[in-house]
Each structure stands twice: as structure tokens, then as C-alpha cells.
Image 1 (cartoon, rainbow, N blue to C red):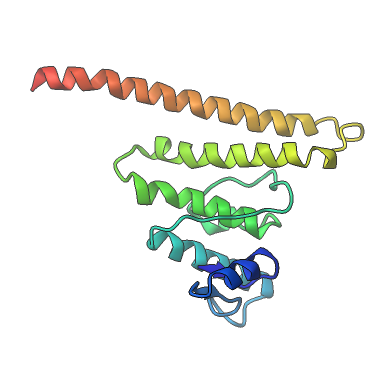
Image 2: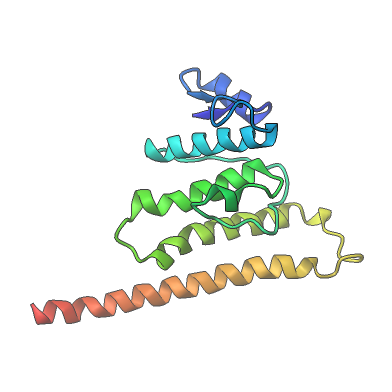
Length: 175
């Protein structure tokens, strides 16, 4: 499954002739504004990939929008100015549904949130030259916030895992 955008989408379609190509205007209302058609195409492609148990690959060409977070709601993912990052955020939010239905909701959302924060931090590091710290010194807060989110979420996951492992021996003693 691949979109119909120029660049990496068309290169992927050329390398994978059997790929299903999702075209703008084929999903949602054809009378909708062009941006809405782009979103509908991306959402349909990500959801089809999730239903098929596929792996979503994205190759963003710029840093992620600061307001972007993984969410199963496409309205929360899209509208930040980057369809690639938005598709990735949506795909990451669907991963827990495919992989681990029995996990608690907060813990299930932590893993894709960590992946997204790592990708955002890596993109920020790769594009560090685009940050103008002289005129916008709080740009370091953006990078620090990503790193703090990664550390905090990883600590919560570690705490949850330790708690579950500690509860297992107690449950087996009661049986």
C-alpha cells in the first residue's frame, strides 16, 4: 500500500508493482477541499495497512510539527502541515490495537508515543541547523521536551512492567 504523491511514494510504487496505490480523491468526498482529500487518502492508506497487519514506513523530509502527537483520531493527527508525520502518528497509534489488545490503555499508548518522540528527537537532531537558537532560544526546550517525554514514558513503562512482574508470583501462590 502506498500513496500517490511524487517522490518516495512514486519510487515505492515503481519498486513494488503489486502495491495498492491510494489516490487523492478516491477516498472521502470528491467535492471536499484538496487538503481534506489528502487527509482522507492518507487515513485510508494507514488504516488499510493496519488491517492487513502491515508495517507503516514513512520518510519525512523535515522536522515534525511541534503539536503532533500519536492519536487514533485522524482529526488530532492531521492539520499540522505535514502529511508524512501525521500519517506516521496515526499509524503508531493503531499499533497497540493490532499487537496488544490486553494492555491497559495508558501503557498501550506509551509505546507509540515513545517511538514518535524518538523520531521527532532524531529529526530535530538531523535538522539541528534549521533551529535558530540565537533568535529563538526556546528551541532547545523543544528538543529537551522530546527527550524528557522519552525518559518519562520509558520510566512509566519500566514501572508498569516491574509492577506486573511483581504481581505474577503473588497470583501463582494464590492458585
